[in-house]
Image 1: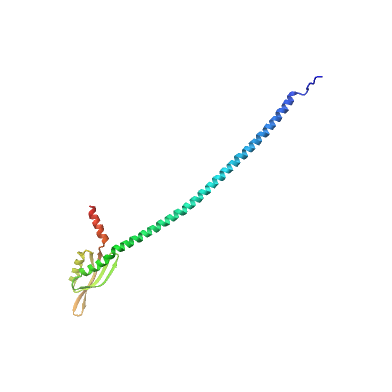
Image 2: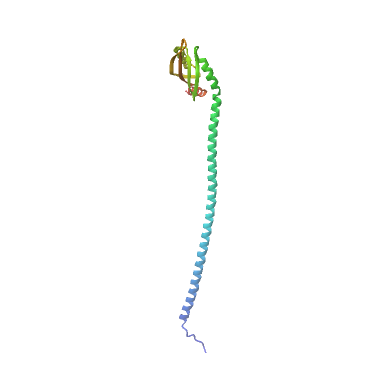
Length: 193
């Protein structure tokens, strides 16, 4: 006898579809979970790699900061060295000035005048001395005014003092010393015209 399937074929087909859907849904969920895990793992690797690169950059920045500090320190040392060299150079240039100054003090001194003290601060000279008369002090100031190494004489004090039978004039005056640098600047200004 022929066999006849009395089960409803639609019901069987529906169960088959539900089973296929469950398998497909489970597969999709598994694929989704695997995809999420892969994406998460990939992002974690990217983040770790970026953190590693950031750490390398921080180390390089730290090294560069130290080098910049060393460079600044070297520049400060260089500036101090240059300042010292300029001072030494100025002192070397001014060495003969002392000789010229003393020579000029003697050369400008008229007869009957002698000096008791000379004090120098920078280019300013304070000169004290004794003269036989006030006219000799005036002559001394005129000599300073026409001097090559001294200029701008200014009388501070003059007193007539009786010493035994004679009267002497004690004086104090100021003058400016002319230096090589002043002369060189004057020459460069003239040549610049």
